[in-house]
Length: 385
Figure 1 (cartoon, one colour):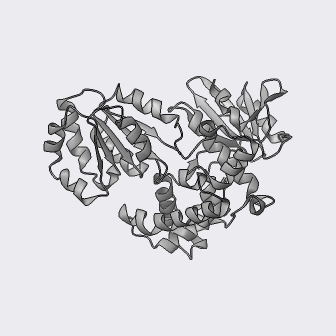
Figure 2 (cartoon, rainbow, N blue to C red):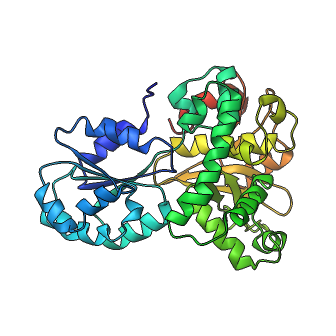
Figure 3 (spheres, helix red, strand yellow):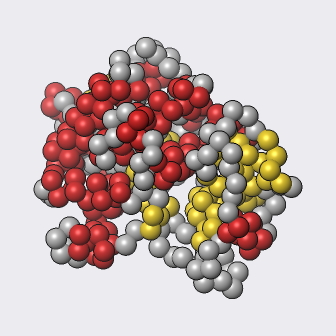
């Protein structure tokens, strides 16, 4: 079954402008499928999977291979397995700056951004492919609930039933820890990182305290806990949401919040296989919050800034979105009749925000107060419309 990914048009657009496009995204999210659809529109495109030894061998002398294929689109999948390619790409692009020459796919955002940033500054455009979005599936309320439970990884969402989806996600977690991370050079016992990941699942949407998590891991240092978090952020498994720190004369919370980016993986780590398991579970509200955070983030311009606002006195906004001179506040509620707390209204006054939304599982949008509107997840495009 094929689904139109909203990023495909943007990938094609960027290839018309830039010599190289880097498409980031976690493993199994559909990068290769999307890349093959893009390659089909470029006659003679060459696709190499750098997990294959034979394809890596073809790039043993990358400068020769690139020069011999200047008239074709080169799609290089799992490029993080050959980081030395970035040094070879720079002189090749400088020798022929025609747009649409390279489409690079990678699963480790932090490493790829650092490596390509050093070698390809001004020569490459970056895009991120997320798991399936509500905007791509247009689900009814029952489908929305299923997407929240299963998450957006294509093989999890398309599984024949919830049990099969849950099994796929458990297998994904095991493979990610035991094979994918070691393949990226990480030398941390899989069971240790799994325990850390599960701790973050229990702390969904809460402040990250490296010292406290380190102690829970058996006395690990706060720097070790912070390093483990970096790994999961770099591989796009976890979002580290920074605090909004305006000069408002308030005592502000300055630690980041953490969210597991895919709700399906969150539920698998917590052993929640069905909607019945999820309903009434203490994590339900924060799971919904993280689910909406990812849907919102995917709808925003690439250079938009996303943060949260919280003061010691209790003023709070789940998401503060800034883009150029525009600021929008988003509160997330797991209720069919959402009523923001007093801290939300106080935060709007603190930040002098004129436009705010309350995102909730409601069937239709409606005004809540002047400048504040309740919005269904299916209509998040209105946030920046």
